[in-house]
Amino acid sequence: MIEWNEQHQMIREAMQRFVAEEIEPNLEALEHGDMPPYDILRKLYSAFGMDEMARSRFEKTIAKARKLEAGEITKEEARKGGGGGGDGAGLQLIPIIELCKYCPGMVTAMGVSVGLTSAAINGKGTVEQRERWALDLLTLDKVGAWAITEPGSGSDAFGGMKATARRDGDEFILNGSKTFITNGPYADTTVFICKLEEEGVDPRDRKILHFVLDKGMPGFEQSKPLRKMGLHSSPTGELFVNDVRVGMDRLLGGEKALARTGGAGREGAKDTFQMERSGVAAMALGIVERCLALSVDYAKERVQWEKPIGEYQLIQDKLARMEVARMNLQNLVFRTIELSAQGKTMTFAEASAMKLYSARAAVEVAMEAVQVFGGNGYMAEYHVEQLARDAKVLQIYAGTDEIQIRAIARELLTRS
Image (cartoon, rainbow, N blue to C red; front, top):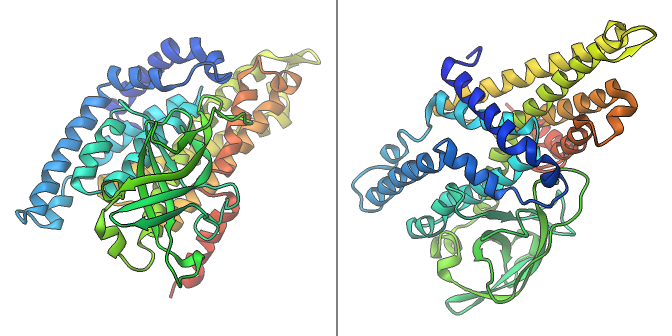
């Protein structure tokens, strides 16, 4: 794929109209945290039929899963037709790109609910669990949160994890806290990741389990939104779990999850990280495209020493580097679409490499846009100020730049 096709362009133009009508007028309320993003996102899903498409895909997937359980089809047959094709991937990425030109936080809120949380349930849950929780997340009828990060763990998400599940007959008692949880304050459905208490097993090596918690359960507390540097339209909070009693029906995978050996729980979370990292390129592309467009317009209009600043070579250098970053990011997005058309995904190291480059490119371009605008770029009145703050988190969440480097280097050094 070397360019957007006609269908992609039509969707892109429709998305741009939606952003102009629904997001731009509400940008200040979203940016100051006065307006949670979920009603606008639901309107987006309804306007583009994304909720009905998600429902249709889910029903087909569940029907196959039931046939697989009954032995009527093989695993290979169940997997067929699940890729969605290149057009499908493109149609999923275009809204991300267009939303990130104005409100990257909305993409984070949407992605964690529709992507990470539902993917965790669909990937690890029984058919009954998927029907119980996943569809409402995929259609945005309910808001989801994926809770892995803890106050003392950071990048050492598994080794430093303190949240626990203690077996008590056919039930579990959960304890622990999570922080920096996207959608945490408003989530209806939370995938809570913790360690099974196992006697004689080093805490760092204990099984990782995933439980589904619903808002309002006794002992489950969701904080108010935390104040943060950027992504103000993406509510972030803390979660506190104090002696929350749950049955086997809330353990993703049920008894099979307890029977698994090795790092199955860790690998499941790793798969979720891989998906999250792959989406960063589309987010970065939206930020870079917007910063570049704003910078070009400003360089034409802003006059210093009796001529537009765009005529000065140092400003031209900044604009040229922004365009190079835009082209590279677009090519990474196209690669994602091409792989999807072939029913493939990137390796974990490839996804890490894409995230590393994309995050750095977005931050560099956004900061250079501020520089082009000079003193105006530092003022909240100008959009580049918000985009610069929003871009920074791409180097932190879903694994810091340093963690991406580690993942890439490990694969390079272990190749035969």
